[in-house]
Length: 105
Image 1 (cartoon, rainbow, N blue to C red):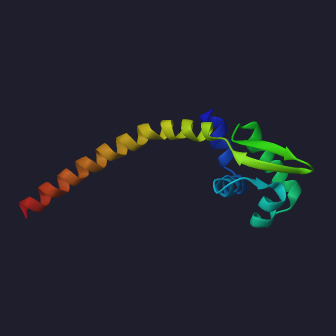
Image 2: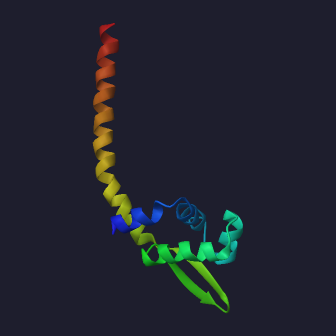
Image 3: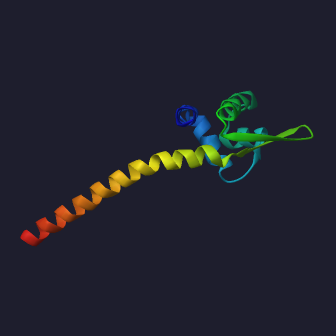
């Protein structure tokens, strides 16, 4: 799932769409207007995000309203947590080392 999520987010327009949808549900037209790209391009990007399981679509009359699904982002956050822990530990050791250096001077 992480690979699919990362691949979907690797394209800048799709990343921007995800950032927009993070603020709330939007229609294809609203997304197109915000990003200043044509609706067919927006629809293609939304299709990729939908196939990756990152967005859901709700039909209301002739409008399609898209919103984010939390699960892929929760999975990504869990995966990133292992890296956060590693870097926090390294930064803590660096802080300790710098503190030792300051004490010596």
